[in-house]
Length: 403
Image (cartoon, rainbow, N blue to C red; front, side):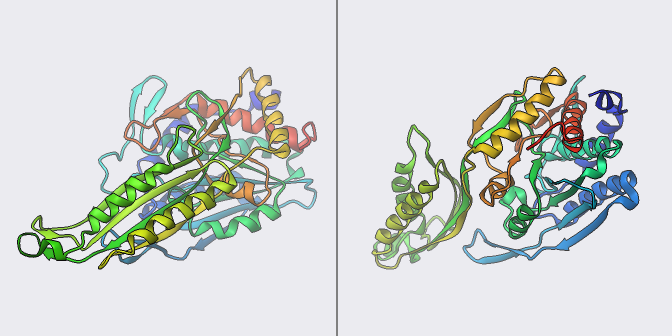
């Protein structure tokens, strides 16, 4: 622990870096902003590790979405970044992950950081996840200051599309999982500092309804309302939601229609689904398709569902338990109480877990109100979490910890 305590972590410099990078808009569909954030972190790694690392930058395929008009649309994404340090002596191969994108659109009113009080900073991405990426970088600096650093080979993966479900970067996750022994993911901790434990699975869908337009006054009965069809669908689909919340279906956005004296012939419904267990996925999809099939029996009406459940539930296993116990032992040395809690949230840790790679996925900063204009970070956690992750890496490198 002495090396961790003695390592110079300049909190003020970390705060300055955090404000700089968070003031860059990096919404998932703002590729220029995402790439600017990538440049920021690449420069930090190059300055710290120079000729120790190699950097690979991949241009991802465009992401195909369903527009508000129910039409296919191509969205450009930022680059996928790999930063690697290889060592022929290494006995451990570690994957460190985080994302470059945020949920705040380029035209959002929430674009800049502001201090709330002495230790609280409000800003877009301060917790999710730009503060966490600074912690990742600092933890690796701590590792590389050690005589045992070459006992670890590490790869940093920074993806540009996590906030929309990693639709294009996800195709690299299985290979990454096979190349590493464990993963550390720098999503923010839960609001009380706990790490996320069991996680739900998730997927995003768009339901496109096509009906028949008609003049409301003259030919109302000959029309078929796409909006009304979606309303009928929602009423039936909502029956999936129970108190137990093993399956959650949320209707997040609905668009369609035009003139108020016209029966709307097109509407689009955005849906997010969460699942508790692997079998819930089949139950949810079969239920939705059954509703759609019944509605499609109506004349002049066609409903089509697009999307998939792309993150399976993360259900703790023995590998996760061992990894948590190792981190908990490090936390105790630093006088921290590292609890674990189940959550309905999800992240790339779900995908790595599916491919068999043990991971903890909330090793980043403490904060809260993520995905809102009230997002904040507890600034003291920049040092706290840098030390925690740095200590874990040091102990792994010196074989004091065995996973």
